[in-house]
Image (cartoon, helix red, strand yellow):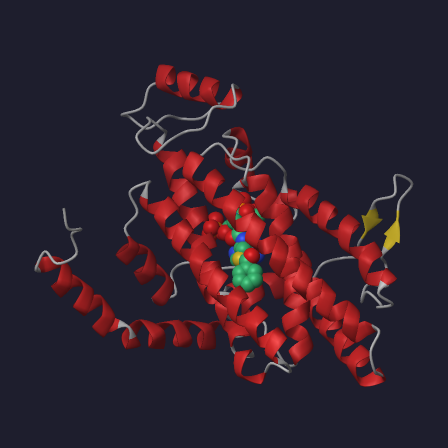
Length: 318
Ligand code: BYC
C-alpha cells in the first residue's frame, strides 16, 4: 500500500507489518501497528459497539408487549445478548487504547456513528421478527467476514457474536414464516414489516464500493475481507429465495436474477441513508435520548462500584 508515512513510522516497520498481514497472522494488542490501522479499528469497533447497545432499543420496546411467554423469553435473551456484544466490542476497542469514557462520551454527545438501521421505528410485533431475520441476517454476513479480520481481539469477538446472532436470525425467520402462513392479518403484518425493513437492511451494509472511502485502507490491512457490495450480494442471494418461499413480496420492482444466478436489486435511496445517519431523518434524537437517560440512571451504580474498588473490596480472597 503506497502512502505518506507519519514522521515516527518507517517504511521498514510498514513492510514488516504488511508482511505479517499477508501471511495471515493476527495482530495482537501489544504488537507494533501503524497509527492509522489503530485509528481505523477504533473507529469501526466503537461504532460497532454503539450499534449493539443502541440496537437494544427498537426490539427492547416490545418486551412488555410480546404475544406469548415463549416469544417474551426469546426476546429478553436476544436483547440481553446485544448488551453482551456491546461489552465484548468495547473491550476490543479498549485493547487499542480507547477508553470506555471517551467512547461513551462520543456516543452520548452525538459525535459517534452507530448503525443507520437502528434509527427506524418498530411499529408492530412483526418488526421484531423482521429485525431478527433481515437485520441479524445482514449483520451475520458482515460479521462472518470480520471474524477473519487481521486484528485478533476483534476477530475473536466476532466468532462469539456470530454464534449468538445465528440464533437471533433463526428465531426471526421462524416467527415471520409462521405469520406469513397464519391468518390474513398476521400475513399482512409480516408483509408490512418486510416493506419497511427491506431497504434499510440493504443500506446498513454500507455505501456502494465506489462511495466507500474507508474500504481501500481496511481491505489493504486485512480488516475487511469483502467489500460492502460483495457482502450485500451474499445477503440478497440468501434472503430473496427464502422470503419468496415464505410467500412474501419483496418491495423492489427491479429485483431479478442475472445469468450467474445472483439476485440484482434496483436503485438504493442513498439520500435517505445519509439523512438517517446524520440524524435528519428517523429516530436519532429519541435513541440518543434513551441512552442518555439510561446513562444518568446508572450513575449510582458506577459510583458504588468506584467506592467499592477504592476500599479494596473488589479483590478476590486468597
Ligand atoms: N450506519 O467507507 P464506508 C447488530 C459510515 S449491530 C451508519 O463504507 P466502512 C444488531 C461509515 O462509518 C451490527 N454509518 O465505511 C444489534 C463511514 O463514516 P466515517 C452492526 C455507516 O467502515 C442489535 C461512512 O459511512 N454492524 O447486528 O468501510 C439488534 C462511509 O462508509 C453505515 C457493524 O457495525 C451504516 N449502516 O464500512 C440486532 C459492523 N455504513 O466513520 C442486530 C462493523 C457506513 O468514516 N462495521 N457508514 O465517518 C462495518 O463492517 C463497517 O464499518 C461498515 C461500513 C460495513 C458498516
